[in-house]
Image (cartoon, rainbow, N blue to C red):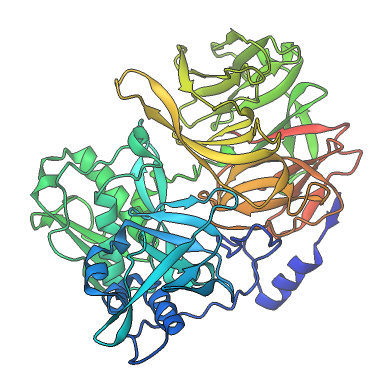
Length: 587
């Protein structure tokens, strides 16, 4: 077995005593690469305008004041009364690339010229800007009682890129998938550094509003319409008391538990425990007053089942189980010869999250074959589905539903679903002429990760989407497409990970070496995956959201390497596995 340690990672381990994969970064500029640098952002306390200052100072002070969502009243002091009355900063926040020459004088005011990085909507959704989309705005100035004031209300608030991590925090609101067995995170950006009571109140209020447009009707909120917090959410000794109004009183016992799971998981991000009441009585009368977080672990969106960490793969076009990644046994590829999948040569493989069944696309591309991996003496549930054209590697969700996309190289790619009990459904999907390259379902069966090839540029990009219900209530559709706008080229693959999304691509131009990157699910941050500068060229990645899953990379020669828990890249010796492996984790 070969072990290689990246020097930079070793330095982190030695200096810090431990190392963890960062979950966020401040790289939001398409020209920056690698780990996020210190952008020099300093949180500025909003101050009212000083008397008799010039035009540039007024606009600079206005921008500083509006960067703090807690100080919009101060920001309005920089405006004329009419402009202040029209301004709606809560409607959106425009994140722009701040530079020394962003502001210039023009007749009658100050011009902001900058590249837009993203728009944060009224619900806190991060929506990446299109390439070279401007954030330009002309601040008209007018004298009021002899003092210059801004007389043109901006379209929302403006926030410089070096202030994002100082002013805002990424949080998740938790809702349920359609089968109500897994929570689904809905990422939003909310004010940073609030007192714990205010932060808890805001999170619960946002949760009770329901999901954002990113998830839409693809998820379920258990809170009945009209459910609100009766008062603010006070916090005492790490316990947040959530007093719901009577709208939640009609919930049945099981639904009460699910609503509690949504609230407990959402507040857990603030390291708060929860006490939940409805009309003054406990929401869960048979549980402890302060609800233990462990009571709601079965709904973990990261799918804690140990089987999710088992690696499989195709070796010589046959399914195998790959063992030895954890060091507890020798590295080896064990053939799965007993199941129906072994009867065929395969070009791709997917495995259920339980690790007991799988599906292959046959080597000739004509069929999708489903069956148990080790059927033993049990009845074998088998299926053989005819395919049409190029078919992407399939994907399972936690309900053993099998998702697959054929006709990928046609004008109308077809996304289909084999339900766990057998029936086939077609999912409406319009890719607007772009070509799907990779499809990865999240375990919840709601969120979809796609690598796409743009028809206009022939370059690959990464986007997320959501399985939703059509307005007629009868069909499922793939919608809410969100391109991540990552500053990468030469993208070859992407997969869900416990920290977000792992993307294989180049951090510069097309001639730059491909590496493994870690992106946030909304595309707001991008950084190198620690340990991702080894002496091989990444091609594909195998990963899933389980917290104990070790990312596995297939290089451009077909050989695999995995990132151990101590951030060491491990590669099997040539004698361990005889030949190239196309790796896959359950999911």
